[in-house]
Length: 184
Image (cartoon, rainbow, N blue to C red; front, top):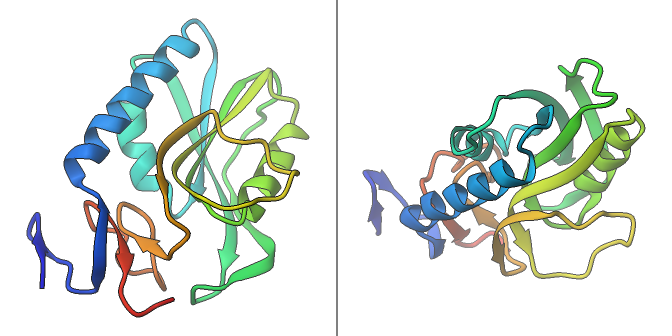
């Protein structure tokens, strides 16, 4: 049994990204976004629920005035197998036409969720549009997806949890990213 930052992680087969590395990488992404969006009307659109922790830390590392909003797109039913077509849930977005938008997502896996969200946002005519993902899996994806400009970490094609990433709504609160034991 491992103990990490006061949270028992006995269900973690292997730790992929430590908390200290997450903190450093998010600060680096924040500096890059600050440079890229200086003088622009920045709107961060977070895909709920997984990206909330990433969004919270990322926006605090960006030294610019900005707004954020939320979009719910579900790609998993209570398990590890992705749905064939994502489901759109509640939206809390005002008009984004003419705004500089960064879509924020927890993980790029099959690409279904991000592709759907990218298409949805693109139809709203933003002035500019990029994507930031906390983790990206090493795998072949559909050509429909615009690859993210901002990537926190690349992880293997295994089921990972922690730092917003979940299994059946659990493990989001881990301050690290790890491979979940006995789920493959």
